[in-house]
Amino acid sequence: MRRNLDTVFIMRRDINKYGFSTRAVHAGEEPNYAEGATGDVISPLHLTTTYAWHNPSKPVSEYDYVRSSNPTRGAYETKLAAIEYVKYGLAFASGMAAENAVLQALTSTGDHIIGFDDLYGGTRRLFDKVYTNLAISYIDLNNLALFEATVRPETKIVWIESPTNPLTKICDIAAVAEIAHKHGLIVVVDNTFLSPYFMKPAALGADIIVHSTTKYIGGHSDVLGGAVLTSDDELYEKIKAIQNNCGAVLSPFDSYLNMRGIKTLSVRMEQHQRNAFAIARFLESHPKVNKVLYPGLESHPQHELIKRQASGFGGMLSFELKGELEDAERVMNKLVLFVTAESLGGVESLIELPVKMTHVHVDKSVRDAIGITDTLMRVSVGIEDAKDLIADLEQALGELRTKS
Ligand code: P1T
Image 1 (cartoon, rainbow, N blue to C red):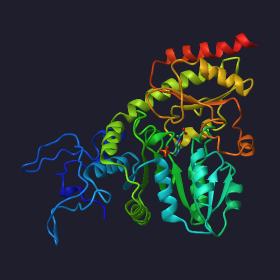
Image 2 (spheres, protein in one colour):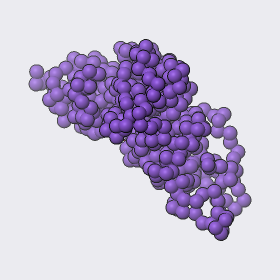
Image 3 (spheres, protein in one colour):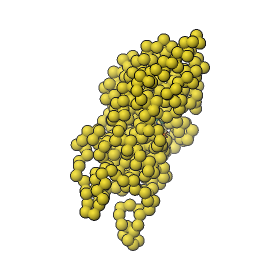
């Protein structure tokens, strides 16, 4: 049963009539004006694992046990749903736990899934190594004829990232969704990279949206979490049952931190994007750089497409050096501000080498086929001063010039 907030709060606001930033600040955080209440402006951190009953027939409230529901997690799930413009939010202990809940709830042995060919390496590992009872086809979803030809009677889900991780490939979500729905497929969009600030996949036809909230939603590289969002009552009930029965829920404290993160999502995303543009343009003009993949650049092959379906381009970019693997490693070792690390979406800038880090588990033949080369580096652009970030890249790339 979905928690009825009216029993806890006196609701004065209709959050649905507000814009993104207002929702991000206020959804799930209505002050409690009830007689005798404390009037908290911020939804408080509510720590208890269990809730009292007056007697075995009469619980004090609609809460019975923390795995099933908790006021802080409930408030966070309300905020998540509001910023994705959907009815329901479900918070999980990690992005992978969220993805797993979707697969567990909606697939059974023999089903077939179609995935974009450049999904996050961990998502591919979940599909390939854990869901060995399913058939998976990875294809370029920009080829809509190929997509339709790949659909089989047992196909259940099409799984999209746009931009993909790490090649920043975009696909036309509305076009994919139209074909998918014609064949009765469920459309899942992993919206981690753009965040709901820049793209609302539900409006493009996504049935389910997943997030690694570890990234932009948390925003400070200190909370692991995941989320599933949907407006579909039946899908929600099925995935909620897995959340409760399997138990990979987000803790109240982490829910509280992520609520705090969401309040600044819009201002952070604007600064991530501003800096990403500055860095992308700098790299594009650098003689040691072979190519820059940032959807905001006119040179990005799907620049026009992303402009149609999103309101921005985000803070993630990848670039390929001229040279060998060792050159990429030399540059990374010289960087002072950029930290070599996996993950993304935090306020600090990170850089990583997919062939040795995030995508090391993806077969080399697959990496070669889709273009994850030895010198491809992925940058999660933070919110520092752009000029400091560019100076750091300039001195590190200069290291390369002295060698040649
Ligand atoms: O790490 P976790 O919160 O479990 O989320 C997994 C995940 C799901 N989807 C996308 C698009 C992701 O990028 C991730 C996690 N990605 C990294 C850790 C990374 O460095 O790309």
